[in-house]
Image 1 (spheres, helix red, strand yellow):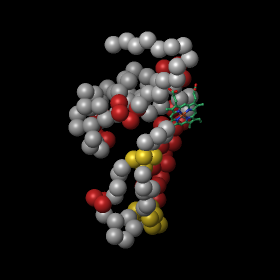
Image 2 (cartoon, helix red, strand yellow):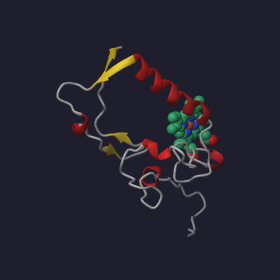
Image 3 (cartoon, helix red, strand yellow):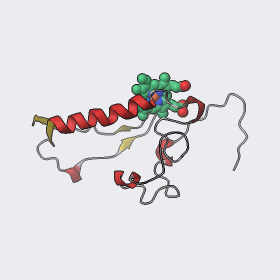
Length: 117
Ligand code: HEM
C-alpha cells in the first residue's frame, strides 16, 4: 500500500468501517462482545482494527479514565435498576440504524426506562 498526500491534507480515519471489515472480524455485523474473550486485540495502540480511542501519538489521553468509567457506569446502571423498553417496543423492533458523521450517532435515540430494583 502507500499513498502520496499533499502537505496539510486532512485525513479522517473511518473507524466505523474498520470495525466492520470482514478481513479483520468474523461475522462483523453481529454484536458479539464475547469475541474479545481470550482475544489478544486490545485498545492500546497495537491493533489497528480496534481504535475507539484513536491511535499513535494523538491517541486519547483519557483512555485509562474512559475505559474504567465505561465499566463502572454501565455496571452501576445495570446493578441499580431493572430496565424495560417502552410499551410496544421489543428488542427486535429497535431501529439500530446509525446516522453518518463525526461522531456516528444512532438515527433514533434509544429509550429505556429504569425501575428502582
Ligand atoms: C469512552 C470514552 C472516550 C472515547 C471513546 C474517546 C475517544 C477519543 C478519540 C477517538 C480521540 C482522537 C484520537 C486520535 O486523534 O487518534 C480522543 C482524543 C482525546 N481525548 Fe478522548 N475519548 C474518551 C474519553 C476521554 C476522557 C475521559 C478524556 C479526558 C478526561 C479524554 C480526553 C481526550 C483528549 C484531551 C484528546 C486529544 C488528544 C490529542 O489530540 O493529543 N477522552 N478521544
